[in-house]
Amino acid sequence: MILVTGVSGSLGSLILAGLSGLDDVKAVAGTRSGDGAAARRVDFDDPASLPAAFDGVDVLLVVSAGYAEDDVVLARHGAVADAAAAAGVRHLIYTSLAASGESMTIAVPHRWSEDRFAAGPFTTTMLRNGLYTEVPVGLAAAGVAQAAATGEFAAPFGQGRLSVVAKQDLADAAVRVAAESDRDLAAGRASRHAGRVYELEGDTAVGGEDLARILAEVLGRPVAYRAASLAETRAALEGSGPEPYQIGHALSLFSNVIAGRAEAAGSDLPALLESAPRPVRDAITEAVIGAVTDATTEAAAQSR
Image (cartoon, rainbow, N blue to C red; front, side, top):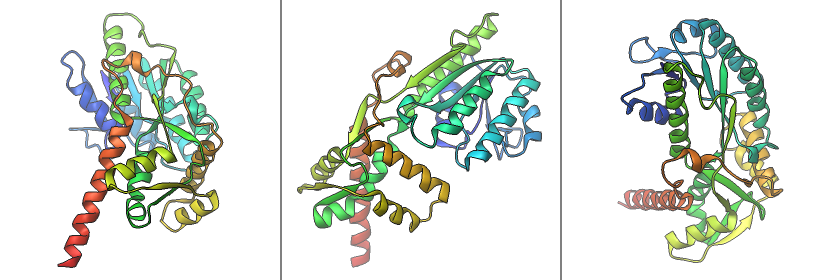
């Protein structure tokens, strides 16, 4: 049996949906709000909830609980490792961070968690996920109004580029690794993915000029890219409501892009997918079109 944690989140829900479509594996959901029927209660902040949640699980797929301060994340993943060992989990899969993010502050809890899980009595697979397309998509969508009004798009990318990957591709890779691991264990052999660390980087790197070109195509007007400073970006973030740790991580990400340290050198993702990775630029274009449509609809409503 496979248990997927964090199924209330976007990545976890995609993974569970993929596994649920397979006839020869049993997948159960794990979430903080689980009632024991539709989903098991898996609350990383309540370690006492974990042993029962992991009972009977052969393959535990841990979707990183990274939305917190680092010490909280370490405590959560340490509790998962202890409970998985006590419950007799045979193989653990962890969604970590790709090598292109190695210099970012978010890498620290991921690498610690990899080591902690690898020290357990179970075999492991590390899925080092690239950054999601949501990063450039969010920047481009947020820049629609300014680009339409002024012909300028500002982003803290400098002249650097950021490798990103479609979340569905990462989910598809996780489904394959989990399903094949479960089948191997059921057949009385070790998972073919045991001890593997997969770099699941995107094959497309996006820069500020790329986003400006997409905005220009959608808006039908020239749009110039301006490299926003980190100070300017910090001020904007502090005024928009994120937690302090989120601001720190975001600035670290942008700093790495500016320094040219956020591009992938290679990827194991294509080998784990049945088809080519999804085009990143298509996702960005669709998001910008949606943002333009929403802005137009809102303006029309206000003019009535």
